[in-house]
Structures are given as structure tokens and as C-alpha cells.
Length: 249
Image (cartoon, rainbow, N blue to C red; front, side):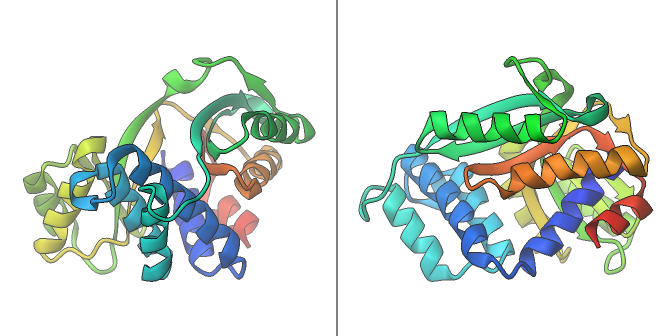
């Protein structure tokens, strides 16, 4: 899992520094709108909205933007109607890829995703072809340079986390999806600073890639993430840290 989670960390840092914040904020707002529409405008009573708002805050999205997105989703501010779609496919070297999208035009998004896969040596697959490789989990990231393993482990397990994994300069706390917010809040109350808390897809097995195949795979992942309708991309690659750092640079 380390190669994939390392890329998630790099993406998060790049996103916070991204000069094209308008596009990033647009995607975050879309997720907030959909969550508010489906579960109501109160984050304390709507776990999906709570998670969407917290993710937006982690990228320093302005409070006014967040509140406006909630109002639009709840029907008090007008706006578009989006639906969630999941695409499954394969990248170079048989890497399994899941694409989560929110769109107001299914045909446009399907064509865009299909073209990206084809252009970069991948292929779309039938529903269920690769989803069995992944499981939905809550992921909480803690800086290992700020907190000791014993303290993180004690706070996480006490809060109801499933597992704590040491991965280089960070600890990854895994939870059930419904427990993410409660575990994060409890850990923060225990004095543990949380860098990131997100719902993600964790691969059960991974494909080891060296630099040549890693470069090809990251091109298709990057292209998918650049799509306006794509919210998240998950893949079961395992790329050495030094290769990931080189590609990210």
C-alpha cells in the first residue's frame, strides 16, 4: 500500500500549492453540493457532507465558498444537478484503476474518461472488473515527526480505528468509512495533530512498477485527475518512493 499512499500524500501537498485553485475549488464545491443535496445541509447530521467540507478545508478553500456550495446543494442557491459515476479500467502493465466522477452530463464524462484511457495505453473495463481489488476505508494521516508511534497507536485504537500503519515519515490510521469523522475528532481531542482525513479506496493487492512503467501509469492517472468531472482516481500500483518523488518533481 505504501507506494499508492505516498502518491496520495504528494497529491495533497501539490494540491495545496496548486496555482490553478479555481479548478480545484470547483471540484471540491461540486462534492459538497452533491453531499448536501443527498443528505441535507447539516454536516453534523450528514457524514458525507462533513467529510466533503473537511476535505475542502484541508485545501484551504474559503469558508464563504464552502457555505455557498452547501446552500446550492440544499436547493437554496440554485445550481446544477450532478450524479456520481464510477468507472473501472486498466492502466499500463495491468494496473487496476477506479475513477470516481461527479457529472451533469454522463455522455460527456464517459467519452472523456474513455479517451484518456485509450490515449495513454489503458482500457475501460466492465463494472465490477477491478472494484473487488479495493475496499472503501477512512484514512487519517499523522506526521511521524510530530508524534510518537505509541501515542498515535493509543489514541487511534481508543477512538475506534481498525489499524495504524507506520509508513516512512507518517502514520496511516485506517477506519471504517462511517467511523472516519469520529476517530479523527477523538484523536484531535487527545492532542494528535491530523494532517489529512479522507475517504479512500485501499487496494488489497498491488502491482510493483519500476520507473518506465511507473511513468506511463502516472501519465494516465494525471490525465484522469485533470478531467473537470473526475473527483478521485484510485490505483493499485506500488512505486518506489524515490521514483514517485522524481515523477512528482
